[in-house]
Amino acid sequence: MNEIVPADKIADGGEAAACARAPIGMLCELTHRCPLQCPYCSNPLELDRVNTELSTEVWQDVMRQAADLGILQIHLSGGEPTVRKDLEDIVEVAAKVGLYTNLITAGVTLTRDRLKRLKDLGLDHVQLSIQDVDDANAEKISAYKNGLEKKRELGKWVREFDMPLTINAPIHRLNIENLPNIIEFAVEMGAGRIEVANIQYYAWALKNRAALMPTRAQVMRSAEIVEEAKQRLKGILVFDFVVPDYYAKTPKPCMGGWGKGIMNITPQGRVLPCHAAESIPGLEFDNVKDRRLADIWLNGQAFNMYRGTSWMKEPCRTCPRAEIDFGGCRCQAMAFTGDATNTDPACKFSPLHADFVAAAERESGVPNPPPFVYRRLGGAKTDAVVD
Ligand code: SF4
Ligand code: SF4
Image 1 (spheres, helix red, strand yellow):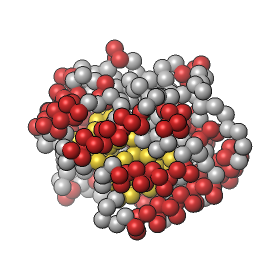
Image 2 (cartoon, helix red, strand yellow; image 1 turned 60 degrees about the horizontal axis):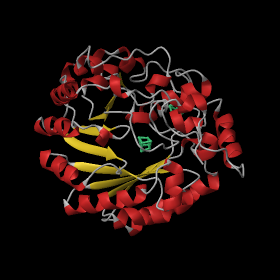
Image 3 (cartoon, protein in one colour; image 1 turned 45 degrees about the vertical axis):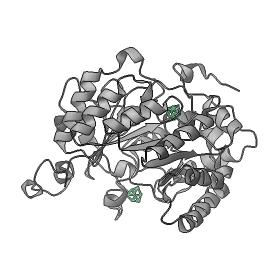
């Protein structure tokens, strides 16, 4: 049990009890550098530059603090985390202090030797993202050549070193028809888990929403494909199906509840309750260079702003699902309604739900979607596109 304050010392059993439990996981964005340029990247539109990234020593100290706080899993992410030459030094400390370490990679920069070294230092798990299993389409989506071939190679090494593998497949208009092949690819790669992740429309994905949005019929069909594959592949492949908000009736409990289970650290060291939280004005983000992780988790302004349910307005405040989905996603409420305290428009009780659904239906119904705005430094300002 990862508690930092004994539950019986908590008087109200509400918000305080929620923060009495340490976060289970921490997403560490080691860098925003990445050779790929996916138009749905969850990194912010303003990417952190290399000369502002945390040093090796600070990241190592963050790992020690995370273990002290009671965090169990560390997700080493980016950008592409393997572009950091000190990844081994960070993994070594994380493993030594007893954290379960997951490397989230696009798989195009890792060599066999380096993976072996990381495994020997204690890396527990690899999560490989794919754009598509059709070479040309994968290249179009990522603006990167021959990536799929490199990912296949990485999969071979992961099997050779007997490491657990998850395939992360962001699903959208350009690859949704290939979902059966994507699932087969995961099986061929020896993955134990696949995330069929309908795109969540924040940051770059929001900018590219009109190019990425699938139709309702496509989404319904993909849900059927996943259900069928789940049964057929029982005991072989576990499925995580991230539901598409725009065609949902009630929202998902974003991040499992704000400030409830996850911390996110940016390359510069800002600590966020979720990776898109910087899109909400009025939040103050502490930096690991200035404040201890445990203090930020318990007392940070951004973590306490939407923790629990007391911040809610109607219709969430009196809704029986308030403790189930926590009013959905604050960032989506902000992006679509202009107020982060509003009900997530993915909810059928939101006054803006009909507009939300209409936007998806309008954009997905356009026969020729707009070109991508690719994810790159300065790309959001220039609307740079790659054919
Ligand atoms: S989503 Fe694409 S561009 Fe963004 S970090 Fe992952 S691989 Fe790189
Ligand atoms: S009204 Fe709020 S709490 Fe109720 S289902 Fe909708 S988002 Fe969830």
